[in-house]
Amino acid sequence: MTNTATTSIRCLPRSICSWSYELSWGEHRGLLELNVMGEQGSINIDGTDFQVCKHGMLSGNWTLRHNGEEVAEAQKSSAFTRTFEIDSPGGPLRLEAESVFNRSFFLRSGDQIIATMRPDHPFTRRARIEIVAQDWDFPTICFSFWLVAQMWRRAANNNGG
Image 1 (tube, rainbow, N blue to C red):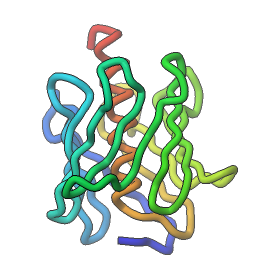
Image 2 (cartoon, rainbow, N blue to C red):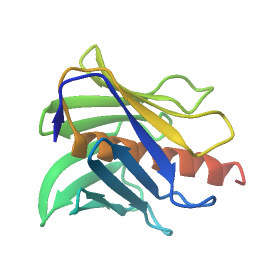
Image 3 (tube, rainbow, N blue to C red):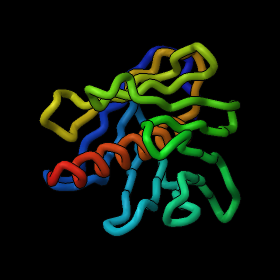
Image 4 (cartoon, rainbow, N blue to C red):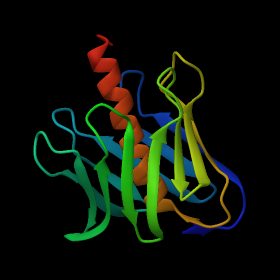
């Protein structure tokens, strides 16, 4: 599940009011589910199930698990920012909001941008992930987008939408 060229991944909500997404890139498919209550969920990648677990109600720590084994971990840097430090199979990553004024996120490895994740326009849940790095793995990208979708849902709930 590794890509060696710049690519774009489509992220479509499962329905008009859904925070669950279908991701598609070539022959790969991802289904991201955010639980209705709480901040946990699941990811299915090409038929393989992963669980996203939050560790404590007030915690900013999530893990991606497969068959009970931790695959990746994300720690929210602060309750006041939209930034995560991610420990992934490919090494440490940073997921951060582009600015306080929009919903775009960057996934970085050190100073290098791995991917950008942004909605198609300000009034939609449809989104696109642009992969700009030479090497990446689909489960880490899906987990990162799951965190982004969670931040978007939080913001919508806080704004009454």
